[in-house]
Amino acid sequence: MDKNGLINILPLVPTDELITKAIPYIRMHFDEGEDEVKFDIFWNYFTNTWIRAYEPSSWNIEAILNNPDKDEIMVNRTNNPLENFNRRMNDSFPTAHPNMQQFVGTVNQIAHEYVDELVLIKHNKRGKRKQHNILPTYNIPADYASWKLEYE
Image 1: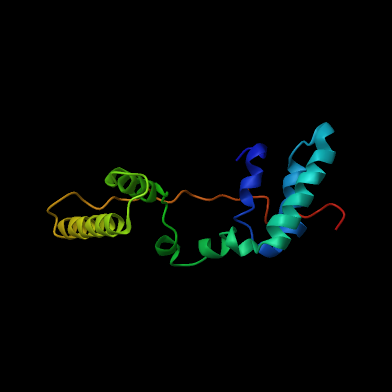
Image 2 (image 1 turned 90 degrees about the vertical axis):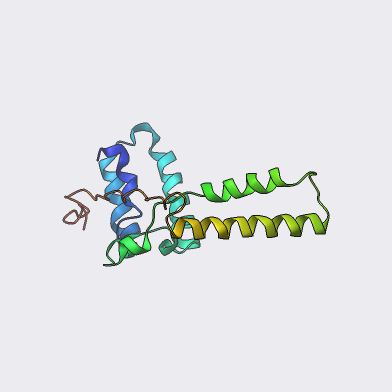
């Protein structure tokens, strides 16, 4: 991992180390140069918003990575099926604002088609379930564990 990618360790380190170790580690290894004041503003914003205002456990995955069942918990997916459904819904209506009967009938038809498709897939009669990508490997630099601030 190059020094420019060090910010990627934030979701990987223990949440109690974010302010005391991870951010100082990143800043120590990144040349902020003449932009130090701008980086101070950014890190203040990041700390106030993503550590104090929001619970870091909502975006930090360290607890999941240390869970023996992590492969069951984490699945690499996107919202593409939802986008597909949205397009299918929009294409199914003759007008932009269908009446209630058209809306309910169309949603009912799409639901039945979806269930039928799942049954066919289950019985290997149509398509196969998609294999999801293998989860990427997450790396924290080797020297992070033993790193300490110089003034400690």
